[in-house]
Length: 144
Ligand code: THU
Image 1 (cartoon, rainbow, N blue to C red):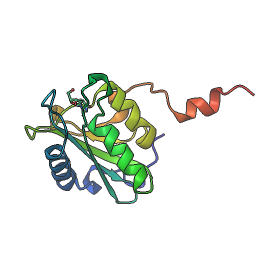
Image 2 (cartoon, rainbow, N blue to C red):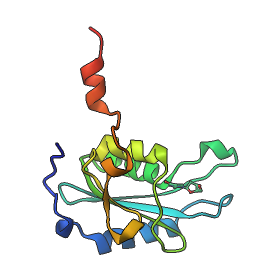
Image 3 (tube, rainbow, N blue to C red):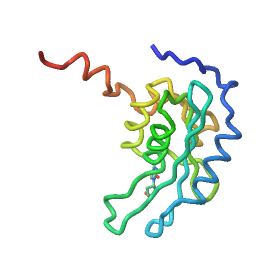
Image 4 (tube, rainbow, N blue to C red):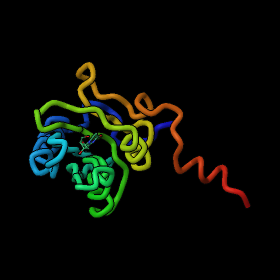
């Protein structure tokens, strides 16, 4: 079950989220790939968090925009994500990588709405990351 106080597509300020994501993408540090990515999230209690990708000369250490967004969320006091928009520097939505789907799952669960461009409609995270492993699994499977 996906329990959110914000559950309707209409309650999500999508235009504002996309604008925040575009602004975040403009601030990204991506001198190597030159793919500038911005992400913006809206919490179930009506707050925003944003992030941009931060690359590194040691390529594997790159931080994705969603990773930066999760960091911002926690810094702002935490809470549950209801919706996330992800945009690239070309102003078009971009799909979250596999690792970021898992990162977002931790803070929004399968009901989290993600706007990344496919078919012009936001998708629930459980569509992008089916049968996800998460905090509930840890609680259920821990040995005594
Ligand atoms: N990138 C993100 O920021 N988020 C994703 O979900 C996909 C990829 C970034 C990482 C890297 O800086 C650039 O896009 C190219 O892979």
